[in-house]
Image (tube, rainbow, N blue to C red; front, side, top):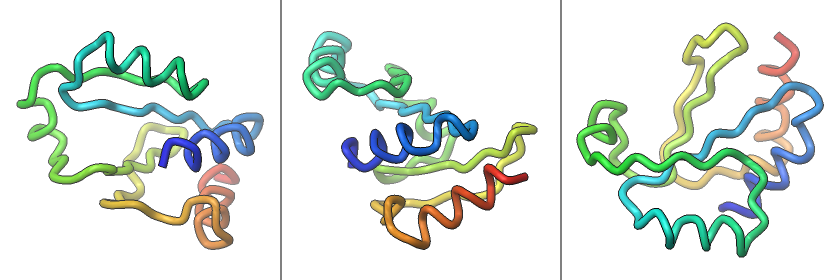
Amino acid sequence: MPSTVERIQQEFRDQGLVVLAINLGEDRGMLANWVNSRNVTSTVLLLDDPALGRTYAITATPTVYLVDRDGKLVGKAIGTRPWSGDKGRAILRALLAR
């Protein structure tokens, strides 16, 4: 999934797409090595408190929240999705056009 997310971020960032990846509970050093080794350019946050995952109702990874420019939650997807496919790109374009 990271390669898909990275490609989508690169493709849509000039249109306003912001990707925040949230990692649940990994070791900080291991996560930093992973991010660096894959040249991830999106922001990666580390939640080191498992209760935060429960607060956001994260029951599986990946969990994707789609938030519009006003900060309103407009969608949630659990599990891997074809964001780089025609339907995924259409959803992102529609949200970015708002």
